[in-house]
Image 1 (cartoon, rainbow, N blue to C red):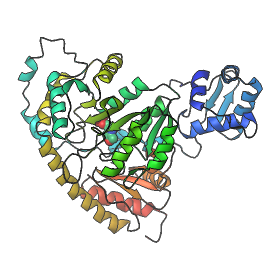
Image 2: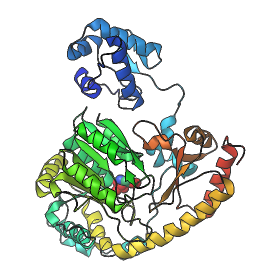
Image 3: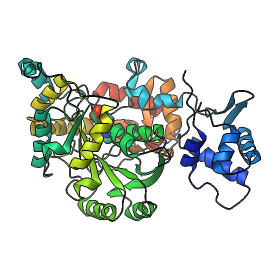
Image 4: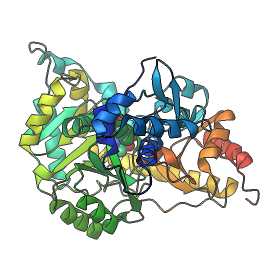
Length: 468
Ligand SMILES: Cc1ncc(COP(=O)(O)O)c(C=O)c1O
């Protein structure tokens, strides 16, 4: 297995201002490194830089680093072996804890159990119909070309721009970059605008795929609570005063809570962002999944195009198997993103893009279909929850494919017990940059009644709340 390592320069950038003026330097340094371990910014197994190099980089005595590493070892956070340096230890209390996380969701292992760890939906009826009719004649127009379209097929860029314009966000085709899904788009945007140690504001909770990308890139995440009507604005303003490089937000329909930001708060959020230098990155993936089947409102149009990067996908509306997403921003940012993209990925599949053009013609119909399907699924799930777990609570959602449930107990421990019983479910800390929301679970609703009934009956038998 490849060993991840952090250089002294990277660790120093991630630590930021670690000397708080209180207590000995060695314990301040140990606390700073422990925080990075807790936030999973230096995950288990990571090799830390040699003591001499870190001391040189931080401008402190080597003995201070030796004592800091020693303290971390005593606290069980580091393992030091003569000759092979110091590594971050796995949390003794969480063997295989990452198996309930995102990476596990799409593995073969997850297919052998009841998997409620992902909210991904099967193909919509519209997608099935369109794909059943696809003829590849359209492909012939592209065969004489080299097949590489880093910004996307012109026909698809136009179709996406037209759809966004119809949704109320005037957009030109050259403001669009077609990507291989939204996860690719997010990773491309973070990779283009962030370097290790940069500060990023994230909502708490937030989409775990984005949190994972930010962790991998060594970003320092500052969490701001996401509440019933959107992000907590006073705390966001405090966070923006620190001049973070980027803010990752979802105001349309928010994953994992299913809540939308109300219009007044969205406007105030936009003006808070407009006053600073932080680049807003808005993930609009779930904005197609509103209760009414109409597109949700987002920040687009409320901020100058150059201050906002919006990300979208066809995965929710049609199917995750069509790897097509998009980025909408200013033309100059489009050029920067394209240069960055070409270094890792030359183009999205032409076949997928041609299918996407056809699908987008039927976006409105697909939204109504998803809304109807999710409304039935939600009421079945809520009925089963009342039956099996009457003490669990959740806010009424504005959309999405899941319920964000407060179990009133340690949901991470419950998820761990459920895993032993063959049931995968994602607990709140998976959706938090700093492991909060310990009593929460995200329950995807789009499952057949029998599966959900069995899953909730299993959980009811595992809950510690015997008064249920
Ligand atoms: C908020 C959010 N962003 C991004 C993605 C990734 O989407 P894609 O399948 O387009 O990569 C998802 C999928 O669950 C999501 O919920």
